[in-house]
Length: 346
Image 1 (spheres, rainbow, N blue to C red):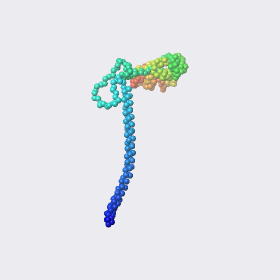
Image 2: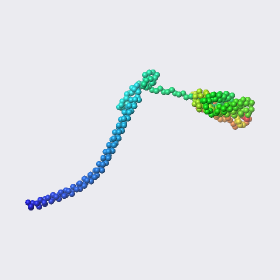
Image 3: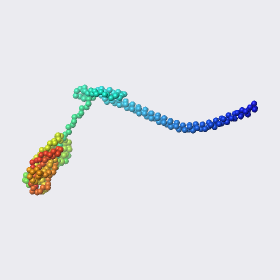
Image 4: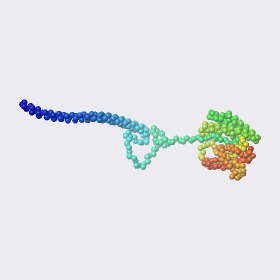
C-alpha cells in the first residue's frame, strides 16, 4: 500500500500541471471579457438616453394630436352655429372628403319665403341687397370773375356780401371779413361811377378797384367751397354764382368768348383785355395784330390766359392794336374766335 502512494503521486502531478495550464489559458479570456464589458457599458448608457428622448417625442406628438382633435371639435361646433339651417346645408362632426363632382347641374337659386323681404323671420334667407350709392354733391362757387363786366360784377358782389352776412353762422370765419368786403365794394362802386368822366385817372382807379375786388371774391369763393364741400344749399346761402362739376365731359369746340373789351394798362405800351368765356375755369388764347385784321397771316399769339382777363405789354405807344380771343376746349379742341376789338395804345 505504501509503495502504491508514490505511483499515485506521479499520476496526479501531470494532472495538476494540466489544470495549471488550463488556468493560465482561462485568465486571458477572463481579461478579454472584462474589457468587452467595460466597452459595452457606455453603449448601454447611450441607448438608455436615446430611449428617454424617443419617449419625450412620443409624448409631444400625443399632446399635439389631442390639441388638433380639440380644435376640430370647436370648428364643427362653430360651423353648426354659423350656417343657417334654412339653407339646408348638412353639417357633420366628422367631415369627410368627397370625390369631385362631374355633374354640370346648377344649384337651385335661393328664394324668399316672403316676396320682397330679405329679413322677415328669425333666419336669414338670402343675400344682402347692395346699399344705395350715395350721390356726391358737386356744386362749386365761382371764384373767377374776370369774365364779368363791371356793371355785372357790382350787383353780384353786393349779393355775396348780404347773404354771407345773413348766414354768418354758416360762414363763421371768412378769409375776407364782411367789413373789408364792404369797403372794397364801395370803392369799386365809386370808381365805376367816376369812370363816366373818361379821365385816365378815373379809368385806372376803376381798374385797380376791380382787381382788388376780384381778388377778394376769389379768395372768399375758395373759403365757401371748403365749407360747402359741394353742397348746393350751402353754396346758395353764400350768394356766390355757382356751377356743377358732374356734367358729362363736353369735347365739342367751345363757343367764342363774348363781350371783348380793351383798356389801357397801368404802364405805357400795355393793354388789358376782358371777355366772357363760354365755359368756367377756362384757358383762352389771345392773339393780336397791328396790321389788317382781315389778313389771317398778320395775327400772332400773345399768350394763353386763364379766366376772362389778359394783361399784355410791349406795344409801341400810338399804335392801333387789334385783339381777338378763343377758348381751349377739352382734349385740345379749340373754340371759335371772338369778334376782334381795337385800341390805340398810349
